[in-house]
Image (cartoon, rainbow, N blue to C red; front, side, top):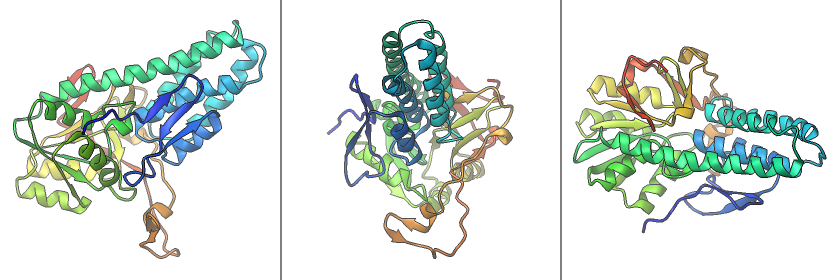
Length: 340
């Protein structure tokens, strides 16, 4: 039975996040009234996915305004700057985080001479606008991307770029949703996506709720299904896209792009324009977050590697633009050479 997936909600007084660390076993919403707790939720992957992180951070700034004891707009601006810097420190790769915070900073700067009450109202309204715009952008992106999907398509995706990774609907999975609504999707191959299993835990969970035909595979199976001619296209999300089209996404994405190139399978990237960072020329400038070694040493409570074993755990890799057949945004389908 299809139902709305809302990973980020605003009640007018508090931020509500669906705790994605507990899925698929348990659906629990957590409430936040302090920006510091929102920052920790982003860091701990309670909320994840570049667009969703940006939306949550925007509401973190709105909460910081509510927390502040400032009596003047200028004093409030100082408190907000502390919150913005704290939120920005949580995830270095996802550019939507910084895009949303800069947008909130710009609004706050324009309110420095007004009342604190007015500033609080205006900042909350801006965060709500960012949320609404993200949902609308994803739906438009999904419709643009569905044009690329042939009838009876067998699609492979990686990580989770669905409603859970955004304010709703999704980017890569948004394309699948739109194509599925048009009767085009025969099967979605869902990479489990080690080490945090966002594919098997989250994308598959969304597919079950949406009635999208799918099969979960171990990451190492992707090459095999491509070799057997069982994949018609690959579509993934993105956390940051450089001016030349180089794209950072969940670790393992680059390997899929190389496999797709070898097997003659088109590889597409889906992301809102807020994910494009024109300030960096290429993927070589993208900062790659390295996460806790425990994510690799364990799957849930089960230890899978010795505690004494050193671990390298980059959260993302960079796919060169030449391996990407097209980048799909809410503004349409862009093909190489990319010039953002």
